[in-house]
Amino acid sequence: MKMTFRWFGQDDPVTLQNIRQIPGIYGIVTALYDVPVGEAWPMPSILALKETIESAGLRLAVVESVPVHEDIKLGRPSRDRLIDNYSQTIRRLGAAGVPVICYNFMPVFDWTRSNLAHVLPDGSTALTFENETISRMDPVNGDLSLPGWDASYTKDEMGQLIAAYADVTEDVLFDNLAYFLERIIPVAEEAGVVMAIHPDDPPWPIFGLPRIVSSMAQLRRLTEQVESPANGITFCSGSLGANEANDLMAIIRHFGSLGKLHFAHTRNILRTGPRSFQESAHLSSDGSIDMTRVLEALHATGFEGPLRPDHGRMIWGEQGRPGYGLFDRALGAAYLNGIWEALSKTRS
Ligand code: DNO
Ligand code: MN
Image (cartoon, rainbow, N blue to C red; front, side, top):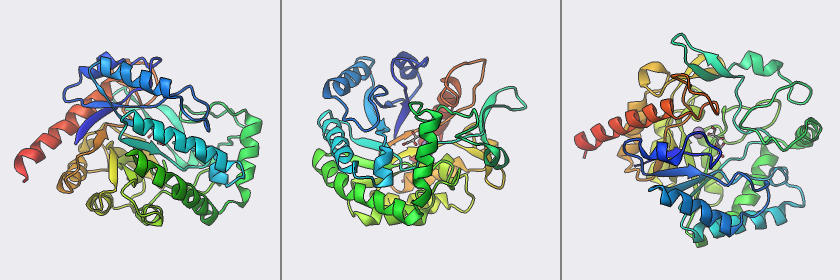
């Protein structure tokens, strides 16, 4: 396992120097944030990013994410040109030595929460998802916007986009994913890169939009559609674990043994009700997920890929991007490294 940490580039209040001082850190998970979705990433920018990370004594371990344009998810005619651009980005990242690309296939919204700063009894704040609140939210007419979302849409554009999904059933969305995979996976193979799809977060449909990457069966369907080690997954314990029905250890065993588990996000969540959860500290005792069992399953499959702590709480007065402060994620990394060391010394 290689411990990694997400960094949002030069504007991130968490610096590469901060990250380097976390014990046991191997590399960085990041992306180019100034390229419009759908355009090929310029090689000079990729190389400059890599250089910045390496001169801080770290490695560019994973690109998370190369976003997929909505026209590809919708299966619009412009998708062929957009898939060509995406392929170009894959080739360039491969040429720059990036081994893993994380991406997702969630319509319109990336990860979604109802509250970004829910105050916990100890005074820290955490992200939460309350089904009640979300079902009352109106993304088009309300004043809702969240940091995971593509801020380049106006409300009008978002309304049109959501309307465009009216005829996109789960099967249509799957066909559009298959069309995309059939074209990009051979490119990734040639470029020496593996693709790691991130599960839906949360793992159920929101705002009436279909979601098709929420369960083991769905992950199997898409990875079996184009059989290749380059067509793999990001295992995210917090996303998949929000649905109690997902058997996390079985998912790890299945994809791990097939060599299709390329990247892991290991964070904890506390399930607080039907389709509702709170992002807890990483510790098993703070949430619903047994983190030792998760890491044990990864360890048992011989997992050697990148792994990162995921969203943390905001603690010790830290301000900044919700979920992505330094302190609680660094505690998470130390905790996960501790579990991993114990497993490595006691298991063969
Ligand atoms: C949230 C993240 C997601 C993730 C993308 C991957 O914090 O886990 O935004 O990066 O869904 O494509
Ligand atoms: Mn994740």
